[in-house]
Each structure stands twice: as structure tokens, then as C-alpha cells.
Image 1 (tube, rainbow, N blue to C red):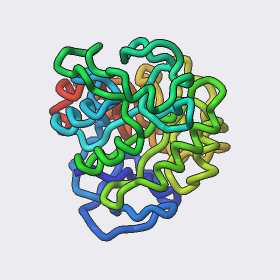
Image 2 (image 1 turned 180 degrees about the vertical axis):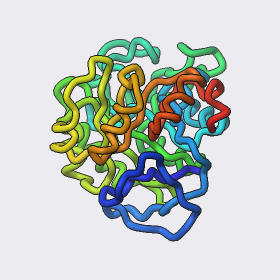
Image 3 (image 1 turned 135 degrees about the horizontal axis):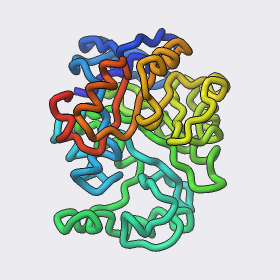
Image 4 (image 1 turned 60 degrees about the vertical axis):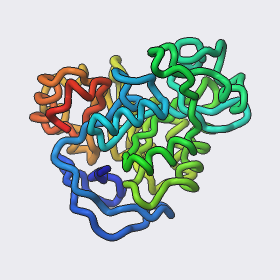
Length: 282
């Protein structure tokens, strides 16, 4: 079953290792009644874009595959269509992961619904669609999966996308799941999400270039730092993040040995493409 993030409620102190409690009563987080916690083991492994090594990323098929492989949480990318519908897609253009061409932001939800988002990955996934966030939430509920929703705005739509993603989560998130975790590389997107749903946990994303993060996280009210795992070269960095009052989670780790080392360093969560490779940790 999907476990609850140790820092999902902003007022709660973050521990070096996430602690997950047994199933209990519901509590209210920013207007959403959610489980306080569920029994889900020790390690916190998150399927990247669903199960990106095993199914077409950011599709319902990928979410279902992640659940079948034993994941209790998944990560996926959310952006806006031309008519303001939140859908799942990583790239700013359609070319790599669908039969469409050109910018995602130039297409309406109806136009995107006609595309094939599975055959690029394999013939068994032919006909897989680009899902809306609303459809994904229904799928997560049926699979009992928690979610890290990365706000991945098209250029110039950062705040608008953050607001729209948060609004959809506020209206549609089921009571049976732990609160969603919002993350983004874009500060404006996180600010938009904060304005709409200040009680939902936010995490700031860092890429391979690193950079200043403490002040940015403080300004955004983030309770987590999500960073490329290569930036974590010693346990002292994890200690520094924890000392700043945040959870430290890393992407994208596809090596079991590397994942075990990071967990030994008290990392709080690991995002992976390869759920089979990290199966011993699930």
C-alpha cells in the first residue's frame, strides 16, 4: 500500500530517515482528507515517470507496471495543453514520446487524446494515450499508489501550470491515498502551487549543475530537495539538507549498489527508472 511521506505535513519535523506509521484514521491536509499513514516497509523507492524502463513513460500503462513491480509511489510530469488541461508529458514537444509533432502547448486536450503515446516504446503498447491528470488520479486510487507530481511547465507557463496542477489535486485527490508531493525545477511553478495549496508539500529540484538551494527552498517554503544523485558525493551533504529542515531525495538511480550506498547515507527517497534492478529494496 502507498506509504505516507514523513514530511507530508509541513509542520512535522523531518527525520533523517522517513518513518512510516501503520494505517490509522484520516487527517485533513489543506482541505484534503488523507490517510495518516500505512505500513509499507523501510525504503522509499519511487518509480520514475511510472516505470520508465519497463513501459512508455507518463502513461497509465507505466503507472500500472510500476504497481505490478511492487512500487508504492510513482513520479510523473505534468504540464498544460493549449486549452488549460493538465496532462502528463515530460518534453515540451510531442515528437519523442507520441505520434504527434511540435509543441505540446499548441495542442488542445482533444487533439492530444487522438495521439498514440505507446508505440514508440513497443508494439505491445500501441494505442496508449496521453493521460490527463484527472485520469491519472483515478488510476492511482485504483492502484493504491502515492505520487510525486513534478510540475513541468512549457516555457512561459510556469506559474499558470503550478496553479492548475495544485488546483486539480485539491479538487480530485482521493481520501484513500497519502498527500501528493509537488516538485519542480521552476521556482515560479512552485510559487503558483503554494498560492493554491500551501499545505501540500513542495520540493525543489536541482539538476547536474547544482547551485544555491537553501535560500530558494526557504523562499518557496519547500520541505524537500530533489537532486541528481551524482551531486551527493558524501553523507555530509545529506546531513546538511536535513539540518536545513528538509528531506533529501535523489534521481535517477538505476544501480542497486548505488541505491544501497545512498540509503546508508540516510537519503530519504530514490527515484528510479528500473524497478526490477531495485526490487530488493521495494
